[in-house]
Length: 451
Length: 74
Image 1 (cartoon, each protein chain N blue to C red):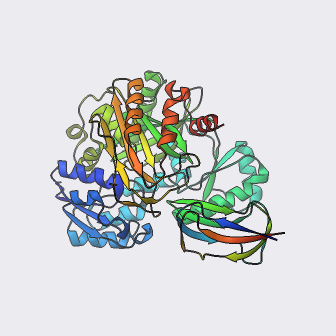
Image 2: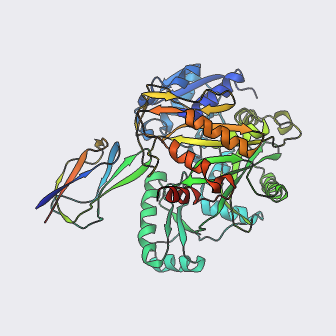
Image 3: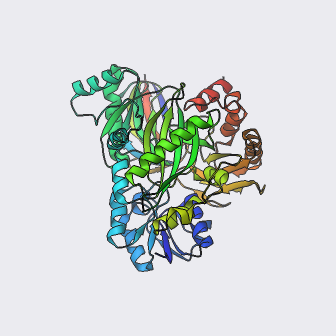
């Protein structure tokens, strides 16, 4: 099937990224925007634009009825959901399919299967992937909650089953804390995901976050595009990501990627996806969750493999076969690192909305910058604080770190606080340079430097 | 009697007010929860006392540094 027109149901850097891909593919595009995003620079790349409502996300980017109306009115053939917002919403994806349009993502059943974390863990276990210790959905009964935590052993991490973006993930170090933490997590889960269910995982203190990039077609073929390391995080949200993962034997990580690919092939997973794993100090891997969409950090994989993931995803959703989309052999060339620039103070990472009175991204042609902002635009409190992604791709990891540091130093931002000083502290640290990173590295490096 | 002004640390909006005027406040109590950029930010009392004034309501927008509540300590 040929797609003539695609609606991009998102904003910011990912809307800009998808619009660029559509233009390169000569597919007409429809952009939607909230009142806060009227006049955003990327809207100029779209063939048509529609305002879909007021600034709060639930009135615009989460407003399914409104987006479906634009889908019909614009006569687009497909929707690209980007990441966040409605990208992993089963009801939304099903609604697109029910209107006889193409959802650029996997079949809705995969969104449903992977969107509920305890069900996804069960599925992964059934197919033979290693899965870390965890509970079922916690029942209301406190005695049973305490028993579930004791069975896993403290500390535990309370997680929403429908979660994402680190929201509502809270640690409990003993039984005295447990019930209050579970209640808080339930309330955040209800508010963030309209589902108060939470469960427990064993809290690993210093795991590495490694994920495998997958593409599948609609005829049972699945391939991987190697791994990313996304261990540098704050509040369970990624800050620096790289491809490939430093300091892991290629054979070890390739065999993990092959296992994941085999499982996804057996399941007949049918579009873009990422399997997230935690790696222990003994290089053992455990399934964490699967994201059934394009990731924020897809660019580092594109840089090292030379594969355009967004175009591939669109072609596969339109029914192309794997061998029409990907080259026969895909290898990793060099090393790529991405830093996420957030509008937040660089010490406590508190949000800092405001007007970008100066916004001058690095101009070096070897540096890739993805952003939805421009000088003079407002960074509003309504959405995620990410204002740009800066990606360096070089022959070696060492060179990539140097290039990224230079680019971040060159990036001029005034009007909002930003986390570039924190990014530079990480890139300068012996821990990061040595590849000895884990999900608490960022806070440990910051604590060491600020004492 | 000392009046302590509690300020918003961020630009955002008021999500939930947890204490009412007249309530006794302990050090460390969360008086209200603000929201900005998908993050919940508690406004915490640094000294004990009585909440004598709320300067905002739920869903109001607040600016960084804006006074949102006053606690009177003995």
